[in-house]
Length: 138
Image 1 (cartoon, helix red, strand yellow):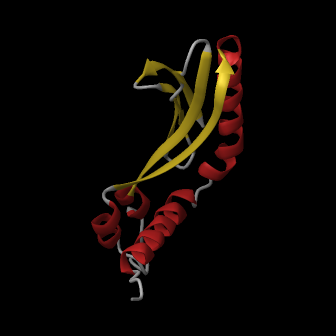
Image 2 (cartoon, one colour; image 1 turned 90 degrees about the vertical axis):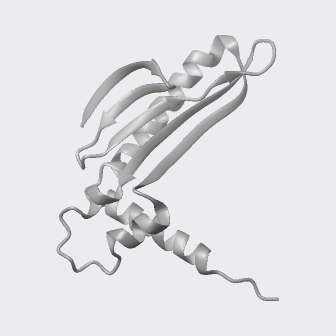
Image 3 (cartoon, helix red, strand yellow; image 1 turned 180 degrees about the horizontal axis):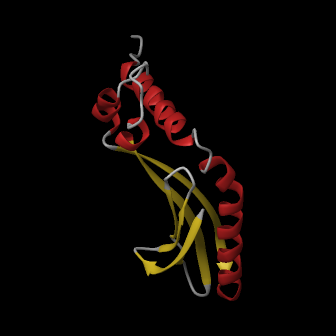
């Protein structure tokens, strides 16, 4: 795992290159509310590219990459947010750092697992497929 500090560009605080080839972007979505009060939000985001997940496929997969791309697109986004509301400006930076650390600490074992990309894409495909084929009864 390689961790890079990034200047806040497009809200990205940090990029972590995971052992499974994915890049985790940690983003700051905080904003001022009123007076000295803040909404503090940290987002962990990974775009999992379908072609990357299935590049070493032996052709025995029940779900084809083209089917996934047709329904979900070329990539599937994982996103997890931690947030706190109405935070005093004096506490904002400490709370933001705490949320960032907590988010990374809790997600890294899950996201860096070698099977995460494929399992995540397939799970999201199955959810989308079920949602698109559901027909309400009249």
